Image (tube, rainbow, N blue to C red; front, side):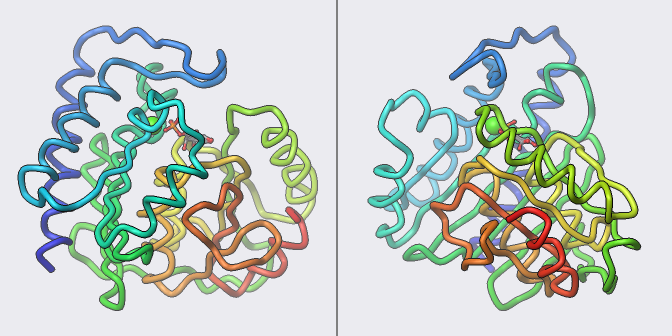
Length: 265
Ligand code: IPD
Ligand code: CA
């Protein structure tokens, strides 16, 4: 519980920092392309989270979106080393930076702890809504302290699923293809701008499923544990077991999982 409490407090404090910075105009910089943006707030908040973890747990390791981007190393090589660490914090300071720069609510702070490569704690905080989603391995998933459960829908035509639009074009086109199939079968589809929030909403039963191609571990890690602990299912887009190094994800209440996979594989 020590790590869960710590992650929850950290996510909420980081959310308060972001909300304060939202009062001023924020410039977006292009990262890998014009479809991929970052702001000084992403970098400052990530640095603050990193220092807080380092102050409390100096022996723990850290993997953050902005630092990983600057390091220039491939994510696969960073991750193959990182997952061997006894304690690895995986952080996205702002998941949904495009929402943030446009002034659209619904970006989140995503913080996960992997112990020897196994997801153990996850916290996703939506500071605009004041909603803290958290989970601990084997201990359940919670929204502001209340237990969460996935939905019980069994058919796609009664299901609401979500997706996002990744920055790299092959992944975007893969999403487009899944979208074409699912639009013919699902009740409706949402795209709320934060993969971590989509996963948290699957855990909460607000969404029945979520898929996306071309994500990174910091977009997914905390949310994956939320879905698993709320009784849902998470795989890659081929139905294989979710791994920290995965970039494609299908998550659901479990009951519609195979139907969803048929549409996005
Ligand atoms: C993005 C968000 C978005 C998803 C993109 C991600 P970022 O993360 O999760 O929902 O569609 O693929 O890159 O860049 O805002 O941290
Ligand atoms: Ca981010």
